Length: 218
Ligand SMILES: [Mg+2]
Image (tube, rainbow, N blue to C red; front, side, top):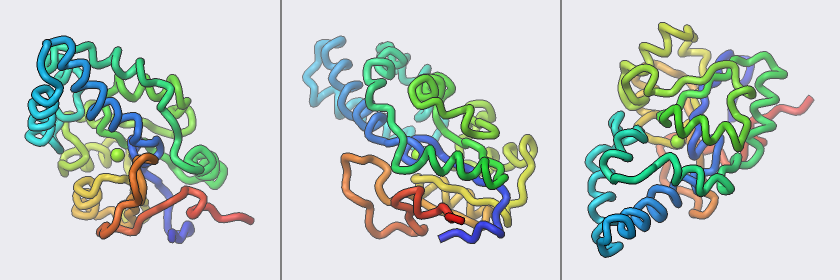
């Protein structure tokens, strides 16, 4: 799937790639509308359509990934909602072993996430993620999401890498398209970002099922 002698740097998405997207999906599509409807005394269907319509409008933009923005939009303590579901924070199959393997084999590993620092910190408390990677970058540090070329340029400026010798693994199609446009040569998506949902079909990039499939055993 990957020829490791051609790769020095591995850029890794967090939600839906290293970690199970089930947590985020339950938070944003179940818990948030439920709590919105209770707090504002609205029918659940009304809260759902109001919130989901606004998620569609902001998708791929920095606001979509910003917890402060959603706290203001919903009038809810969004960080507290994250803590409520913390038991659901989990690695995808063999993700921890993969991170250990990268370190052992001298590959540079960089977390590149659109998640807000507050969300990253909550996940780190439960998954102990940050210490397993060489660098951690949230798009909020750069002011542009990964869908935007400015993110990749800034990443290159701050953590120089050779795009021809870099692998990005990310479950977001638009992010992979943006990375390809920037010139990153090796791109993989994730077949099943949410463990509760079926495998995705018809993907435009090669899809990883289990990180075990990327390991070489010697
Ligand atoms: Mg993702």
